[in-house]
Amino acid sequence: MIRKRGFTLIELLVVIAIIGLLASIVLVSLNTARGKARDTKRLSDIRQIIIALEMFYDSYGRYPDNNDGISSAGECVGQGVSCGDSNAFENAISDFMAAVPADPRHNCPDSSSSCGGSYYYYAYDYSHSGCDPVIGFHLFENDSMRSKYQRQDTTSGGDMDLDDCEYNYCLE
Image (cartoon, rainbow, N blue to C red; front, top):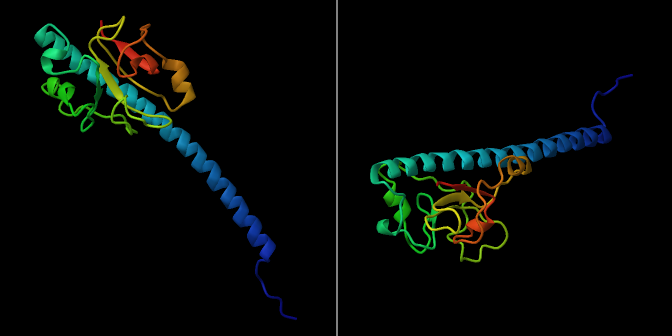
């Protein structure tokens, strides 16, 4: 008697289901890691921008302001990102930072746009209420990063939605 070796349909379906389950678990954990990596990049970008702003201050005795064409309502920050068709902030610190980074998930041209849901941007405001000047970004993606860093100032009100930002850094 000759026996044929092989797998039954049930065995194959069970193996495929297990592989699918494992793949979905890996994808979920990768998405969490990607969000945390983008949050870490946001913090790093803001630190680099702060260094460039401090170098600007050392050279000119002031932070970038309306003398540099920056709106008193504040500006979005980032290479190729414009709010009101202005890249005055990027131009002002171009001697100190070759390319000003944009938020890794930048999807909102300015705070007055209807972005719908979550939006991501860096912002700078030299005349922010209670903290002059201030730089920050709107959202963290990872809850543990949000609880660890939170807001770095106590400002109320302001422009460019900085009062709604989860991470603000007061330069003075």
